[in-house]
Length: 250
Image (cartoon, rainbow, N blue to C red; front, side, top):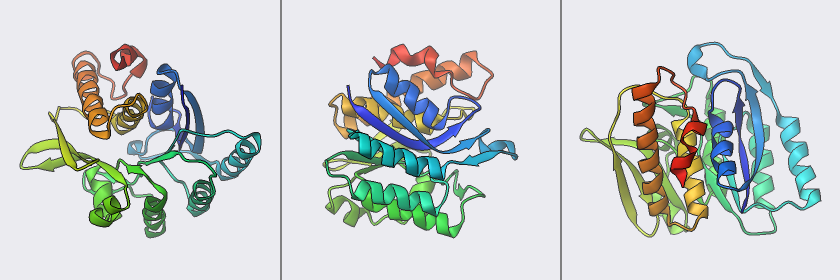
């Protein structure tokens, strides 16, 4: 059993973002500390939204946990709401007095474009978090806008997983551990919400079970493919009812 800190947004509608990850990791028996960077009514594809900024809560909670003495075996960083949050998280990680693993999955965009709410300053904030990350898992769009120097990145001992990569009509996750690898998958019809969050949750679960980054990625892709096929066959909902599929993780 590990202590895992999830820093991400809390979306009320559906099982996405931090809620998705927390469900998977709690099922695997880990202590999950879910620290929301914002409370969000629904995903942004609906066109309208309501958002509560939780910056002060984020700052106070991290300070409280430092005073209590909580240590984390892995810290997952996702959605960042503003520059102050970036500074809080960056300084918190930089000042840790113990070794942990930082997984960073920037929430920036998809299908070739950035989200409308993401301005140049926030893009710079996300880029700066590469410095404190051990493993990153952006999708292909996010990786493009991060302008990653992969040679320098891997020379520093950092690892990456780039999801939703397409080349010549084939789809795969491109990763780097001891060397570069690819894990292929079939592009299926229908778009489901929360698949990136599910990827992170499953990957962390397998990685903490002792599998290599490549093995964890392969197992994650296999499980998501099974879940995806079942959802599109038996459900009209775009959300994944992850509780229905938790037994597949074992």
